[in-house]
Image (cartoon, rainbow, N blue to C red; front, side, top):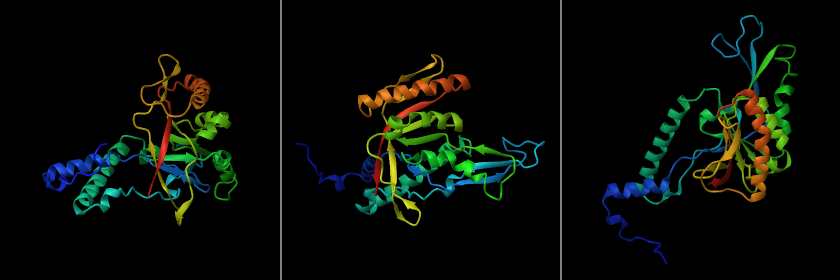
Amino acid sequence: MPPTAFPQFPLLPPEVRRQVWSLALGKLRPALYPFRNGCWCPRQLGEGDANYDANTVHNINIELRHELLDHVPQPAPSLRTVNCEARAVVKDWLRAELQSLQIRQSQLPPWTFSSTGNIMYLASNQGYDYYVGPWDRLNEADVEGQMVCFQYRLGALAVSEEMVRETPEDLVEFVDWMGHVRVLYVVVGEEPDLSTVGVRVRWRWEIDGDGRRSYVWDYDRGGFRWGDGERTGGEELWKKIEELGEEIAKWCKSDGIQRFQINPVYVVRCE
C-alpha cells in the first residue's frame, strides 16, 4: 500500500516544495456559465462593426450579452488552507493562469463568449427559451418595428447528454442558426446542479476534458472521425454522437466549415 504521508516534505529545499505545490494545482479549467433569460440586448452598430451597413438607418444588433449571465466565482483551490507557503503558491498560480487566459482572449474575436475562457451551458429544459429569446426581444418597445440583425457570440457551447439523446435536431438547428460555434461540449452523466448560492451567483462547474476523445470534423475527408484519448460515456451515447455528427456534417459541407468538434466531457463542481 503506498504511503499517504511524507513527513520529510518540510525538509525539502523551498524551490522543490513550491514546485510540488504547483504541480498539484494543474491548469485552470473552463467553467460552465448557465444560460438564463433576459440576456438578449440591442446594440447600436458603428462603422467598424462587421454587420454595419451605411445604407441602413437602424444598424442594430440583438446580441447575447454574456456579462449579464449569473456570476461564477474564480476557483479557490484547497491547497490555500494548508499553510502560508502553499497559499502564496496558489496566489501566484491563479495570477499566472489568468494572465495566460488574457493572452488566449487576445487571439479570439472579442465578441465570442469563448474568448472569456468559459463555456455557456444549456440545460435540457432551456433549448426553447434560448431559441425564442432573440425573437421575443423584437417585440419590446426599444426595437419594435426596426430592422435588426442577430449576433451570436458563442465560439463554444455545452449541452446536457439528455439533449443529445432526446432532441438532437435542436442541436443541429442551434449550430446552423448561430454560425460561429466550433466546439460542442456534451456533459456526460447527470446534469450539474445549477442552483444559485447567492444573489445571481452559481456553483462553479469546471470541464474535465483533458486527454479525452473528441469527435472531430475532418474537412479534407468530408466527415467526422474519433480522435485519440480516453473514452468518455457509454456505447449508446457514442452512437448518438455519431448520428448527431452525420447531421452537423451536412451543415459543415454546405457552409465550408473547416473546424468543428464534439467533445464528450465530465464536469466537476468546485467548492
